Image 1 (tube, helix red, strand yellow):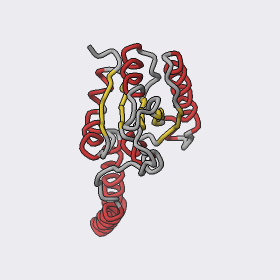
Image 2 (cartoon, one colour):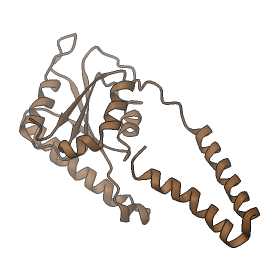
Image 3 (cartoon, helix red, strand yellow):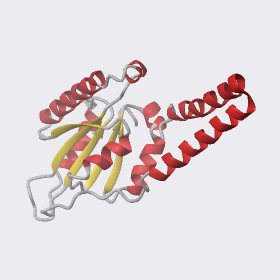
Length: 203
């Protein structure tokens, strides 16, 4: 779960209960508390089990690389790492891997408050254009997609149709790498594909 979601959930539970006690007394407060508990149980019951993330089956034995870019990737070291992965031939000695760049949306507070995801999608598309152009300069062709704001969910959604043999998570720097440590660890533990992480500017 994203760090920003927990305070909102707590507030969403606590505020109605406190308001119920203040405005209607103990009986109303208890009733609101019971409804909140019931809502939590319903949401928990509807959560999908977080099992392995399996890529779609491939119809060949070549490599298929999914690059998850949380930033525009222009850093030479990051481009070189992606290029190395993309240029490794498959089992049948093909010309190289199929490469797909995935940019999770990054929805700002005001966009979320206004329920307007278009600006975040536009920013993600801009990151994709920059990244794909940098890869093209390095001689690597890639397709591009915009994904869910949750990195793990974005990968899981994409792998329903993309037969990834490798997943590379590219992070903007050490600060973002620390913030994304939970998502990175979850991908590493759940993915049924090779997983690696590239931190721009690291080392």
